[in-house]
Length: 240
Image (tube, rainbow, N blue to C red):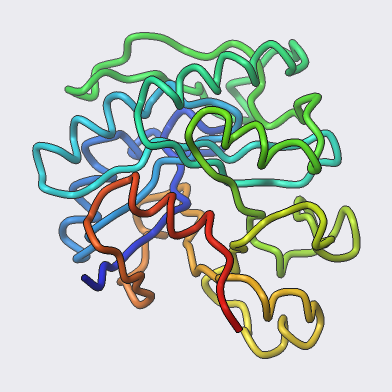
């Protein structure tokens, strides 16, 4: 089945994420726009994924629990997991390897943790955009050890991307999938980074505000609309 997707969305837990980006609002907007499957990928935390997954179940939209990890090299990598429990365990591992820099709400927002009714149940005190002590060469294997997968985020960007940090995407790092920003020129990026020709390319919004969630354009073909099927696809090399 062909499914409309956005696998890179932020909630009000993320620094600079709008407080209107609650789990139910995100799922509601995804439904209005016509998405079939989305992923919640807050910066360096998975603590709003339980509420988002439950909201998705009520709305009939698959929500994949995930995280946008900032690696030691200050490159962003999207990590996706089949179950909330795996995502939360991964988040605990990341937290142990993250610097304890206090958040400044007046600059970065309150970093809100919500329940399935969008009620505030906590606030994350550490600043979630700081780089964790996890390297690019280890993140894919780490995500797989929790049953998930990972792919480099917005490789077309000149900051906070694997291409900005390493100058490209080394084949030995093992990624099968990469993400382009919504407005990136695909052919231009293929010319700039030829290694992308051997990878599955996604188009995601990286939305931090409801108004930045675009109409769906890209589709993925999955046997079933589940996190497990999605992860299996993204973790499989394409045949050129």
